[in-house]
Image (cartoon, rainbow, N blue to C red):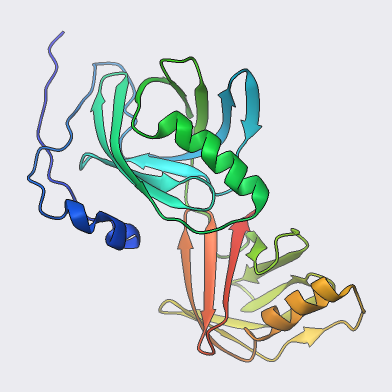
Length: 259
């Protein structure tokens, strides 16, 4: 069976530009891709990581762990907190990742533990890929497996966005309603409602209506931070299943879409 190979031009990843600068002078040809007739392609698909089985133990993935094998010869994604990029040579059911680079943000303990497991399975490895419908299984030479599902980017509207930063308890969440132009949710302790107008990458939040319960200090501190988002304009962005809100006063909040 003939296989067609084609050299690809590397493209810089804007999110990881500081980490990819060293690659900017590389010549085209860093990756190649081919497909076997009748075998579903893995490139150009946003794959959400479900779990990693390593050393006989299955580790469940956090909500935003994902990877895309680009047709440009690179793989890009998130280990669950930190983002990564690598050369990706896709040849039939074989995927070779090399020159992996990653951001180095500190995250909550559970995410960091999973990241180490996923990075060990993916970074600078040759993997065997098996596609079954919307499912992808990647297997290492050591027998560890990464299970993934074909995924779409979460919509801003109608999604329950669970706040992960500054709060990591999962008790704070927001939902935007595009029909009513409102946002509602929980600030960790108290419930909140406000007008929310979305336009050109910005969200204008009105004055919040908040319940008046008292909770432990950690939750109240989270509420004070979240309340700084209201009654003003925010920049927002959705990356896969992560929502980032940034106010003019420098407050940044991150949230993930509930599965």
